[in-house]
Length: 161
Image 1: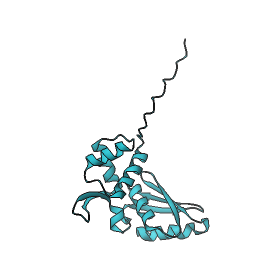
Image 2: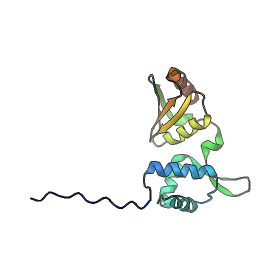
Image 3: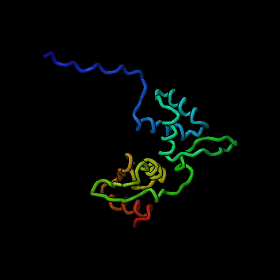
Image 4: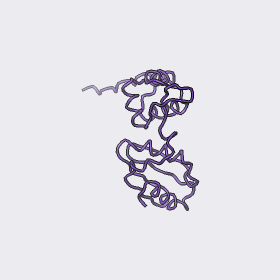
């Protein structure tokens, strides 16, 4: 019996297909406030080497909490709600727990990224940064001595205190 040879990896053509990476780039595009249609967003992603369909972009926009709004020039553009609303999405947070080094925020399914975006936008003095999955956000404190304080602040923002 001849051993099977694993298939050769597909050549890398510069495109990125990771959903996490695609949403990260889409967030950056939305922050520029220049795209007025989903078709434009697909094209802007393609310019950055990311292939996506309009329906994928539509789902990503919903996941990221993006909305179509009128800008200062009277043109419709897609924007991140977290950039405009200034309020923490407390209704999306299920629980906030911490240990000595990190705060874990459980959210409704698919809502971790908008929660993380809003936390980052708040620029809390004790928050170094966030990492978002699908329903979990890791909030990393600037100092491990302030982890409990950061958790309490996030609980307060979420109305869980």
